[in-house]
Amino acid sequence: MTTQRTSGRRKQAMAAAAVVAALLTTAACGGGGNGDGDGGSKDGAAGFDAANNKVAQADLAKKGGTLKFAGAQDADSWDTTRGYYGFMWNFSRYYARQLVTNKAEPGKAGAELAPDLATGLAEVSDDGKTYKYTLRDDVTWEDGKPITSKDVKYGIERVWAQDVLAGGPVYLKDVLDPKGEYQGPYKDKSKDKLGLKAIETPDDKTIIFKLPKANSDFEEMLALVSASPVRQDKDTKSKYGLHPFSSGPYKFESYEPGKSLKLVRNENWKQSSDPIRKAYPDAITVNFFSNANDMDQRLINGDYHLDINQTGMSPQGRTTALKEHKANLDNPVSGYIRYAVFPQSVKPFDNEHCRKAVIYGADHVSLQTARGGPIAGGDIGTNMLPPSVPGSEGQKYDPFELATANKSGNVAKAKEELKACGQPNGFKTTIAVRNNKPVEVATAESLQASLKKVGINAEIEQYDGSQTSGIIGSPSNVEKKKFGIIIMGWGPDFPTVQGFGLPLWDSSYILESGNNNYALIKDKTIDGLFDDYVNTLDDAEKTKIATEINHKVMEGGYYLPFVFEKFINWRSSDLANVYTSDGYSGMYDFVNLGLKSSK
Image (cartoon, rainbow, N blue to C red; front, side, top):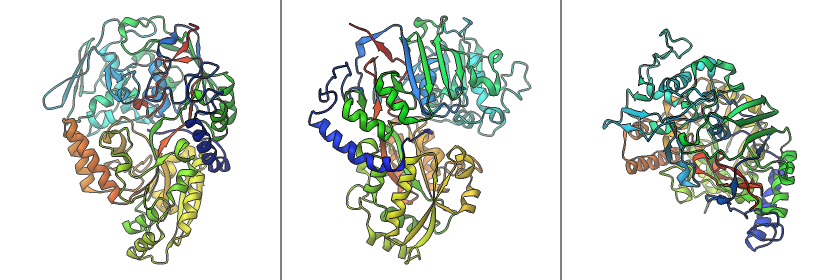
């Protein structure tokens, strides 16, 4: 899952950690926060970390009012097929439903699935290849017409129209049609445009999925926004993201890309048909800002309730907020890992010892500081499986001792690895980093400085961050530009090793463009473990395989993890029913936010 922004200038990013650490030390001792310690504040804020994996002000939500989001980045698309930003998946639950979705509960429970349009979770055949659902009564579109099984099928079929609707996740396409035989609804020669054979709709309330090969995470894929129903007569193809047709409690009233969005109540939505959504506000607005510092100040001033992007306050904003309003802040683990990765096509990184020389040569405390320190940046990353994914061992699995003995770098071990890879005097390389991510640039500069101490001279090349898929996502371009180190980050599409690691580590996911397997890992053992995983229906065995995959990835020295990312996020004193969710990578779960009643 991709994120969208990291705000603040480079010097602010490097300086913020010390300020934040000092402020949070004060917080731990009971100071700050409008003079009210970590508890509630004079203006009614719930307290520092009050909504982190638990519900803040749960019983104070009222019906009515306007929920106001601010953002420094618009969605990649509001089209349910095309959206891939994490906050878009979260926000889309206001206007798009699926057969199943994440539970509206805090913490780990939020990553579990619950029925949505369907009456229950799937009826699954013993061989794991057939999934059957029945739709609820009274599920309707915004014009009052019933949502049918054919609408669900058609919405899923749109994933095949990658020539028109590129951008979103394609798990459903890969699992239901691994040979790529279906051409998508726009090229479908059948009269009803419902020619995908892997999905059957025997009547308007029944939908059956026939998988050519079992995949134990299939129901997780059906919970993605890309499995939302779309009604054929309302499909405007590439323009659908400008005004999606609602199956949820809210509908689009107006949208100016990059400027503003307003949702209003869908009067044809019925609470009795929806076990997930409470639909507290009367309206939901989003305003987009070009300057993250300005946006954060407006949040602090009370003009908006929360940040839709959910990637943490800017260094300037969080410093002010921690000093004066810490009772309005939460510090969740995001579910994302920030890292450097070494493409094997660029010498000398075809040699694992040269890769490991960088891992040992890096100063991991300095890298953590560049990302904002332990509070605003996260714990030092020691491996490549996020804490929210079953099979993760967190910092307990630290094969290179990055958080302990070697946290400040180990020059001697780095030089041993350089000798082992035939580069005893070091080598030259290039670090590729996005130019629109100041914290990433700061991270690159930290890495550059520590590697110089072991004889590795790294130049930094900043590239257009909006063109990632064609620059670092093109293996031929990476090889041509000699990008030996790429700085990036990733979060789970759904909370399993498949939902996180398949696009990064499986050889079948190496693409000519839009590639995410930057290391170009072609390891038969790792590929085989993923095959074992998708065929395994036992949860304990799946967890064991996930751990093993992570170990194999780390043993190859393909990655230098920086941090298990954390954020400082703003929560208005006027909000009720606020909580972070592992289902949305530590973001606040938007779906049941409400404004606080006066009682």
